[in-house]
Image (cartoon, rainbow, N blue to C red):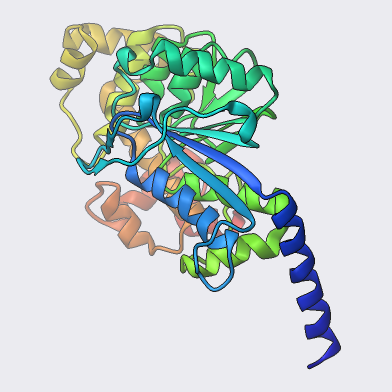
Length: 340
């Protein structure tokens, strides 16, 4: 055996010894209709890193899966998950993750028991993790006093409506604000878990989990969500926010002006007036701009061909897409990709 292998084995034994003395302890709370991808991805990173050879033993990391009163929880996909424990002593964890899903708009799902338990954890200095819409439950408990939170672009309008005093962003995969780390959900929960591994055990341990999951890179927190957004930071009219987010959610099936107006609760003429006043644009131009924003994201963050991107953005051909893209961003798609 080479000296390099001996040193590697020695380091591995040292990590195992440290883990045996004090493994990383993580509690995961499932809410009603939790998102399977966020929960399973986050947990699988921990599982694969906790042991060697994919044996799933809780050596480096301990985890507990909980729900309020230990009740079974149904995922947003309809699968029922039982054998959950009730909320445990917060002092037994180094991190507490709250995993939400489709029940984010239902305030009754955030019980007083859960809120009080999260407050207790926060007071004891235990960092909280918001997975998917679990951030709603943390904000409902009054634990987002300052800083920013990361939410999925599909629910940002509802979060802003519910918590208007909290600054939320959808141009990150996750945001570490110290005692609160929030992520967009879905596969971003994997990136958050890999980030925790890197923090506590180093990049090699995170790479171990990455290889087992047949992924190729650890995505940075500041990687924008696959999103196509308009800057509304200085727009006060909530009707404009609703209109923009409705168009974003329907980019693959663009709604008519009448549909957008009905969703916002105004007439088509009113919609045109408020968009002109706030954004100096029309509904048709806004839709085209959002499609081009999505195209810009794909040009910058993927290796897809310009033709494929043009078609996915709703343009008939790459020539039309390239002309519109250059008019908005100052460069044709290929030059923009090269510069990026």
